[in-house]
Image (cartoon, rainbow, N blue to C red; front, top):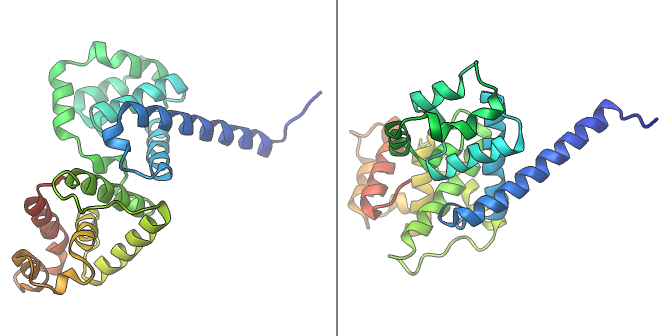
Length: 241
């Protein structure tokens, strides 16, 4: 009789989960190119894996078919679609089996709720801002999305040539932003985009009038610098962060 040790069973489980996440990521990349095409493959995989973990932990959804439906909603409606009250009430319905619920959502949730969920959608919600370890991936993804959005208007824009370069750039951006008292994800994403478009030490330049105001106006407290910078960046370039 073949006997598996507990650690071997865990290894098999982890292997199956990893293979599923990889397969699902490939499917989503094909179905939602605008969302995934700007991202390096490993970053896209991490993003999908995080949402799989979230669906399993928060809603006890474990079947691959049900997780696939949940992730498609994340892509088509928004990564936090489940936080819309009516949708969340169905997902939390204890009279239903958790793995049956994703397939039922389209039939039981009103159109107005889907519209509200879509209006609430933020790409940043693919990542959990309460988990600091996800910050580098969040900044990297938001930078890639913003650059891809700007590329048709600014042909000189180039995405980082490889994942290693992107990782180093984001690490530098996070460290430099912290030196300027910017610690929030929105502010760091905006800081990284400014580094990419305006160059190193952009915060010491006067090319853009709002740059001097954000970083040197004493009326803007350091704690407000990140949100203010994010707002200025979105207005300047008409881009979503």
